Image (cartoon, rainbow, N blue to C red):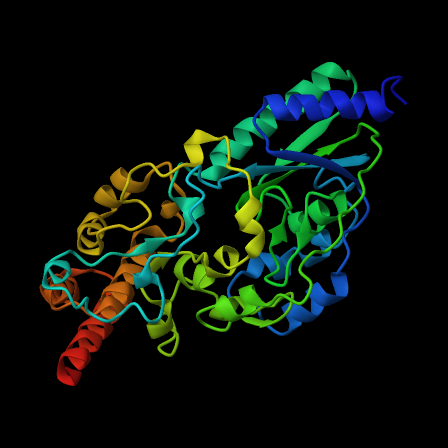
Amino acid sequence: MNTETGGDAVQRLKARAEELGFDAVRITTAAAPGHSEHARSWLQAGMHGEMSYLLNRAALRAAPLDHESLLAGTRSVVMVALSYHPSDRTTAIPESASGQGNAEPSEPHLRSLSPRGVVARYARGEDYHQIFREKLKAFARWITETWPGEKARGMADSGPVRERELAARAGIGWQGKHTNLISLDLGNWFFLGTLLTTLPLPPDAPVENHCGTCTRCLTACPTGALVAPMTLDSRRCISYLTIELKGAIPLELRPLMGARIFGCDDCLAACPWNERAQAGRETRLAALDEDRGSPDLLQWLALTETDETFQGKFTGTALLRPGRIGLRRNICVALGNVGRDESIPALTEVIQTDPSDLVREHADWAVKEIRTRQDLR
């Protein structure tokens, strides 16, 4: 065993994490995560939808973390958090994001504004994967240089590990009824990263669950995807529908999506622990421009017309994930839900010219939705 383990090593490690810009760092063991039976039942029920990687690698996710496919000889797991909570501390969701936001504004001057969409808060800045990889790589290199002979490997959404369960065991926070981690210091607005190391370190203790009888996150979900506390049916989740799902969005769920075109913050925003959350320090996670959180839908419809314009606008951001076809599909649904007459010409052009059958079908649905609203006026 290295002569500098225990409290001194932990103190140095946590100080280095602070220098690298992480907002929280805690340590747990390499033991297998808990909740494996719940995870198995969830997969058997098909609630993972088309995310086949969760099923294919389920055994690895349930195993101890010292196996060769991750890092052989892992003795400690360092969990880190990176906050994207904005300094203005706002948590409100634009009205057009909700299922009630489809009506046309009553004031004439508002009716002239372009229809707006909603992008989940985490995707408004630079791609967090790249930022996390950069920091974790530096962290791992520092460990191997500080303690020669030891190994380290960092991961951010890139390995078969159950980050939220490990982070809860390490004491960064607790898993709320919406399945996400909640921190007394960071609220809901943070990413998790995992760093495996052969360095033996004493684990931190978990923290108490502070959800109590609160069910705000469960009732906030627009599509009823939170079917029970700690049980998310991904097939109904707007984040899944707008990012992971590659095919057609189910007809019955489209009206419930409102103007959301990438992800959904509703269950996170509803949590009262956000009220005391500290602002994040990583400026690259802040919105790249003022309109990134509430984009002009017709403008973004034009920007997704070709792969070249799509790549030019969204390279370096998480908005690349659904691809041109997926994001354009989502924009069409949002335009149908917002229900503005001036969207019909652009949607009609999509129907006539887009090479994707999937996009054309969603554009056609949107036009029919808008005209149905016209008939009801």
